[in-house]
Length: 336
Image (cartoon, rainbow, N blue to C red; front, side, top):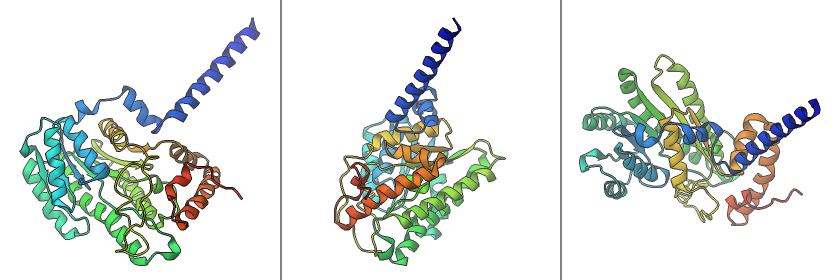
């Protein structure tokens, strides 16, 4: 009798771990975020009627954020450098939602022109009366080897991705602390947690954002209704690679590579909205094997270094050969 009970218990334990392993293999986000998606608040209910300022809203993740936020009934402030593209995004937001023209403000913004950020923030608040959510999404990526990259590229990446984001945050944050509520959501990256070849400057700027917002979160413990959230996506289908820095500031990317391996932008953004609606402080979003990288770097860094070096070598080889560097993560690398 006792043997039967012990056997049944072991079968239950093995089944439990098997189910969790299967879920992990099929997962495209961390378990906290997936749990929120399964049984948490729905974005359509939590985000309706909120004023959301999105930087980098003219393409990629920012553009998709605008569309999905509009469908949730959020009032939008759309910012990027290209006003014509922002107007295009606004038109589609109006077509796919019940928002009116005055519910969407097109506010051209250059993150590098930090002296203009106070004026832009005042214009946003004047139009809607307040800002509920700031989504820091603006920035550029990088595709170049460190040995070939000008220091000017590193300066440009830090000025844009880090200081530009910090500047706009510092303009909006006092407004939120005065109201005692609000959300600041910053799009970081998997390379904000781990490193990746060809992205030394980009990774440094994202690590800087992680450090800044993790520290800021602890400074705001007296404001429990202010959410500081960072989003760490793996590769997502977007135009960010087409606009990436190379070894020189004004040199364009030669080849952007295939998008077919990457997570659809719509899925990434849906998970982001779930995280915002449920107050998730850090979101890991990525298909396998990238989700595995997140957990490996968090819990088994020695193993993570081994895997990163193995795939990183192949990525550099592909880049030097003029091939798709990102394909290294989806083909078997050479270990010799």
